Structure formats: C-alpha cells, structure tokens
Image (cartoon, rainbow, N blue to C red; front, side, top):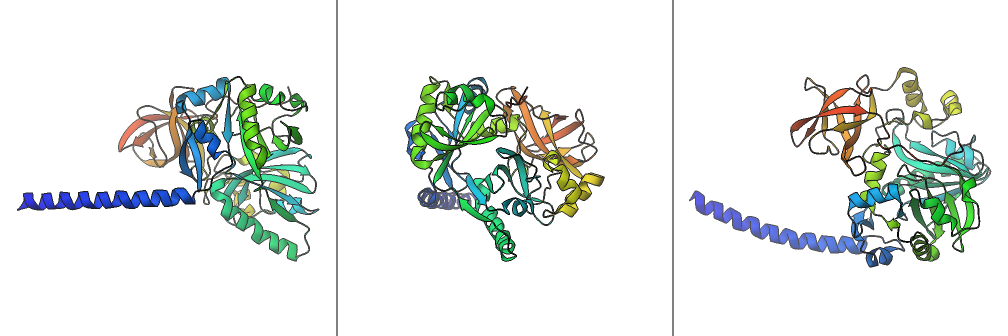
Length: 407
C-alpha cells in the first residue's frame, strides 16, 4: 500500500512538475515580452550576450568569455557596459539646489559647477531610498542617475516633494532622459580609447567631474565616474547614436576593451567595496550604518534640513548600532543572508553581498555587524549552507581604487 501511494505521489509530482514547467515557460515568455530592452539589445545578442531579466529589463549577464575573465580584463584593459536601464534625469530652475537638498544628504550648494558626488536619498526615518550620483551642471541644473530597480519609487518620491515645493512658490522642474542611453567605459584603457573619439582634453577632467561634449559626433553628457573602482566614464548619449558609439569604442581599443555584463559588474563593484542597493543598502539602513558618513556634507551635519536628519545626526553623535564591514573567509563563498557569528557562536550580523574575487582569487564579502565588532582583524564565523567557516573583518576596498585625481 505504502509503495503504491509512493508511486501515485511520484506520478502526481511529475505531472505537477510538467504543468509547472509549461506554466513557467508561459510566464517566462510572457515576462520576456514584458521586459524592456535598451537600444543596444540586438547589439548584445549579436555579440553573444546572454540576456537575463534584471529590474524589468532584458540585460546581458555575460558574453562569450567567463565572468572571471571579464572581471580581470576590466582591471587589465577595459570594459564597456550598457547601463541604459538606469534612469538619468535633470532638475532645472533657480531653486533646484535647495529642492534637492531637502531629499539628499549631500552639500549640493557647495558643489562647484561641473562637479558631482555620490549621495543618498533618505526617508523620514533616515533610511536609504536609493543611492545616486548627482552632478551640479550649473547653479540652475542638476543631472542625476538613479538605479533601475528604484526608478518608479524614486520618481514618485521626487514628484510628490516637487509638487509640495512648487505649491509654495519654489522654481523647479524636471526632465527624465528617456531619449538618451547610458554607457559605462571602465579600466586603464578607458581614457586613451575615449580620447580618440573627442577633441576635448580628457586629461583635464578628473574623477567626479562632468562635461557636455561631442563624442564620436554626438553631444554627450560625460561624467568621470563608475562602479568598478577603476578610472572610467559614464557616457549619456542620444539613443540614436548609442550603437555607433559602442562600436567605435570597441574598434578604437583594438579588441582590448570588451563588452561586459552584469555578472562581472557585480564582481568588480564588490572588489571595490561599493554598495548594491537592495543588497547592501535598504529602506531601513542609514547612510551612517552603510559607511557613507563621508557623503554627508559638513554643512548638512551642522544644519540638517533633509529627510531623517534627526536620526542621522544623532547617529553621527553617538555612533550607529550596526556597521557595514568587509570580510574575507575560507570555505565556499558567503552569499547574501549568510549569518555572521562571533567565535562563541552568537549571532552578530548578516552578509549582504559575497562571492569569489576573480582578481584576488579568494572569497570576499560585505555585511553588517554589531558596532564594536567592526574593527579590521576581528575574527568571525560565517555560516554557509548551515556550516560555519572562518572569516575575518577586512578593510575595503578589497582591490585598490584607481580613480583619476589631480596629483
């Protein structure tokens, strides 16, 4: 009897699994059709891009080379990423700076025209709504880029506050740059290759600086920044010129700069100790806890005036209860949500990002631990699939950054 029930159970399981597969296939194709595509989609596919769903877009996770090789090539030569899924927008008007300062922790007023910084949009509790690179183009024009996965909530948040600000007579308007695409060119060959495509002298453009210039014949917004720890640029280009620009960059590099997908992008940013929103930063994590105290402008620390300022300024005074730290570890690589324990087996925190570093050939991770246990050299145990492995708190970035700054 038990045997026949077991067989019946197995056949039902098989049938359900087959039905699930068909349903999953239908869901996949339906969702595949629903996925947004960047203007470079066909270009990726033609170059062997393996496309996956990411934040509502169909994006390349890798190309013909492995994620390991691709990561190393970025640091040795260069990488070209399509990051057009991210949302670029401009805020304009004589009050755009005081408006933005209500929503972010940066000293936007203190930025010189043509310079930018990483900042965080905060909520009333001081938690991070999103991180963003903002640039003051001029005193009445701010250009910023927000994460693809946060686009809808970010735009709703900005719009809600903009309506209130304008109702009180504030002069601010916005434009979402859906007519433009965004390419990231990163690595030691980024500047020499891009220099072939513009008459402007790129040696005079330093890390965090912004210019509007012609590149490969198209009027682009160029920011010397990136998400890899390497020198490089983010290039906002009119969408009709994006494919030609990508082709020109690859061509001018003689094949050394390679198209690079989301897989290597994640390894690179982890090696550089950079946060991924949704993993290492969330609505309940403050910039202080996330180790981004440096991004809170000096004037803002004195004056506040942004959402959640009370909570954040209090943490600056007394210290946060948890802190983001780096780890190296033995055994299999830690992953998001791996438990962190002290040497006695007490829970002290959680990993938020982790993996094997292609450049360092060892496990690296970041996560949050209780304050006091965050000092470099502190020993810990990291649980991977229920088994504890030795880990040690390690300074970040794991790989030294190579940003182009005035000497």
